[in-house]
Image (tube, rainbow, N blue to C red; front, side, top):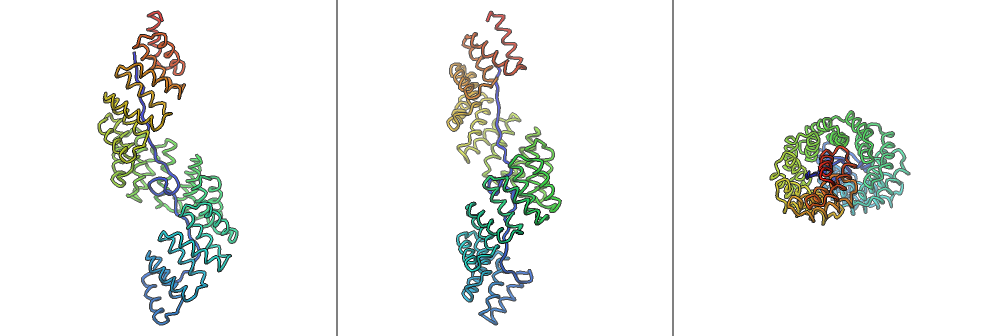
Length: 448
């Protein structure tokens, strides 16, 4: 009379703040200020300023401007050397401290960057750009509160700084304060209606708030302004995926990948969208490409395993789940899913071991108790099966399948009174359960 209930759980990777998941989501913060001079051709500028320095070794501006040219080329060490020489010649040049601070920040030396911005502010306490840029350095250090304080001070000094509003919005987003983030991005856009990054990142904040339609509208506007912005296609694809509109999600991920073929997260999430459509073959292809780009993506192994599972290819599913667990031995869902694959192969001992490990990691994982109970029942160990179904029902009293399966286990033990009570409860919770209805009719015929 038994009918087993099985389920698998996928881990979806969604959009978020920078650093939360693989791929491009938010557009980086905006530095302001610092002196700039030159033709825009860094090599030409370096040659010009070098000649000026040879003619006059005390030309502070030439050192500063050659530093800017080196910085534009990404040669931060030479840039810093030039800014340092300029400061030896003039230790009170605010712009040079700011420029050296930018170079240190771009090198990832946030403490020295903060020291330079702080010195610039000692010399000129009204330098809004220095507050903005010191805020960027604090933000990159993960000191969100000091970053917000600096952006706020920058805005007191320059209320029309779209960059400072945008940057403060990013930090509020990092802190999970999405309402303030939206307010700051909105103000930035009022000041600069063409600030593409603010549309993209306001979309992220709306997405995090669950405002999917507003998020889509912002990503769409970002794409009107910049049709080549892969991040906006990717992020809009995430929202469509969250809404269950898998066709539009696939279209956006595909467009993002045309613009950035190395965007592993877009392959991963397009795989999720294909899986949502039931197209497991295409999902597997995309997860495989994501893993080629990022061989340590636990979620891609896990979800490719899930796609193999739904195709009935349990051996490949188990291989992928096992690799996911090598990378993350504490992934509860993967133990559970591998247990389900072992169970469907008839390897109940390994299934029980995996469900047990999942329960060690998460003792409140009701469905793991239920499915471990199924595995015990399939082994004929009905007492342990009943104990697991009972625990599953303590955690989830509305699990109709656990009542049904416990009833089946009671039947195998000859306890028809308890079986009838469980099947009646299962039918109450799921009036469409034809198996429970049939089994109750059989019991009635038997006089129970």
